[in-house]
Length: 113
Image: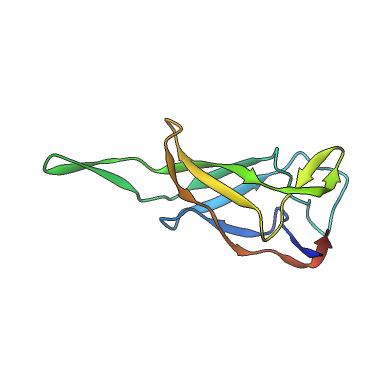
């Protein structure tokens, strides 16, 4: 079944409202912008998450996304693409899991199976 694919123009957020930026290595498959690949770099900025410590707190923001479920049937140069049903986990700089990434908007005109 076809589903909307993610592109570098898609909108994603960490569970705390940080913004995900996609830096793609894909230079071939484009829909105005590059299709996002599971192997691309997904950086997070603006995450306000803090860990309570004693009477204060320590910043522990989400900084990247690691994909755990991606589109195996639609690939670009052997690399899996990402779709609305893909699953990713947001990680802190120390690789601690922070929660699931939210796909806010994908490219509805580009679909894969």
